[in-house]
Length: 59
View (cartoon, helix red, strand yellow):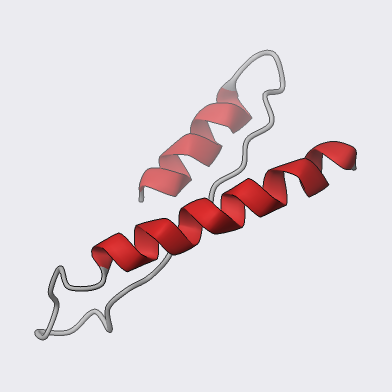
């Protein structure tokens, strides 16, 4: 949902703003949800973004 909000705000912006988001899913969306993998998911996303941004900017 947060990523949708980011993309929607960029789409509605008058200056045609570009945006990029990455999110890692760390559960099966069932009753066994927990916080055990949230830190690992955040690290994975951050590493992906750190490698992706230079490639995106190079075009």
